[in-house]
Image 1 (cartoon, helix red, strand yellow):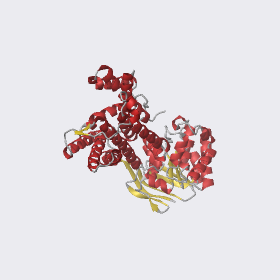
Image 2 (image 1 turned 60 degrees about the horizontal axis):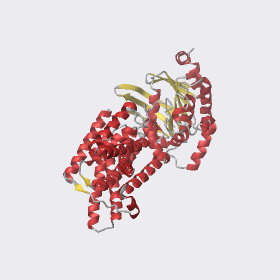
Image 3 (image 1 turned 90 degrees about the vertical axis):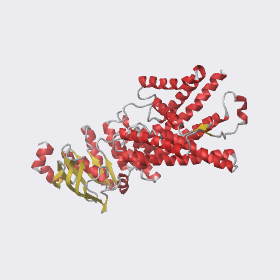
Image 4 (image 1 turned 135 degrees about the vertical axis):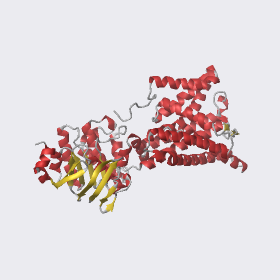
Length: 300
Length: 235
């Protein structure tokens, strides 16, 4: 039972990270129908920024929790700036071009950012210090869940609640939904569509950066290539849940996390990716629009 | 109030509007009638800034708006109810109305205006939590007009409000159009295929054919005009 619980919580942790990153894919897709392949790189840049900030502040001898918070905030700002710029440079000029052009531009942006970090930083793996302290209250349950996992779970829960409030209840959130449903009509009621698209990229990049810092603390290693695999997994999570659907992205993330965790625990870690993608294939056969996805966007 | 001066609009190489000029004074209801594909909707989209003209100018209250961004144009008080209503299907009725008031910040007045449109169309109040996409055609048209009213427009652009609706609902919608004009002194630019109906509510009319304005006169004279009768009134 303990083993099951451990796998369950491990899957939940992993899944919540996938969910955080999947949110960015799904929000951007919802609003401009583009798979933003550079999204994984935004996440990687978040992790790198955090590592740089942590290294500098550690040398200055600051308190570890303060370092972690500052690193997180700087990573969020930096990644948001990247997300904003990528949209302006690589996607906005192609808004009225065929969709394939924007997709190719996204893949190009992804390769560019990977190689830019590789050249500007290093092609090697760097160790990422885990600054999350060991909480006392968690000690009796240490065989099931660790402090890092607890922090990951709480942070993602808070981010998701904030994001839900933003999208459901604020005027900006309503404008985001309106824009994703009918861009021309959104303009006709006075919504500045370009600004809404920028806000969407910034929100998605900020959540990806938080995901980057959390997962880097968890795994303890980063390099320029980490965005690729996580990006693909988060993309799978978004498609599983139904791309364009925000609750779908979260659900897809959890399902993917559990699938991998149980596959690793009961079969073998060699099979974790096999099961993850097998699940995707099965879902797409039986529900092509994803679990919570809408088929046929504009017809009711 | 609105002055469209010799605009030309193209979709790719196809010219949709040829040297179109229209003028509207404050408080007026004018109508633009014409067959399918004559360029009526394009004219409205040019005014709203969605399809900017290649040449010519558009002035609103003396200010040039020809190349303005659509959201700036809305902020000046020009609102459009486009063809096909274009209700946001997954937003509730209330949220659709909120979007109409997107550029306003006066919460108390927005609430009051929402009560006002619920008064105009009580059925919308019953459906306030329903998704826009679940409404019937007539309800959607009512919601589309209400959404535009939420912006407190000075100039209301209406594109084919009668299209696809039952005669009773059309009658009701046209009554409301007259009421909006009378009560709030809102200027109305009405585009219609149903010329008979449009000319009865409007004071003046323009007739459009193949992207060109071919005739303009008071509604009374247009209703009596033999060519208009033959082409648009069906007798």
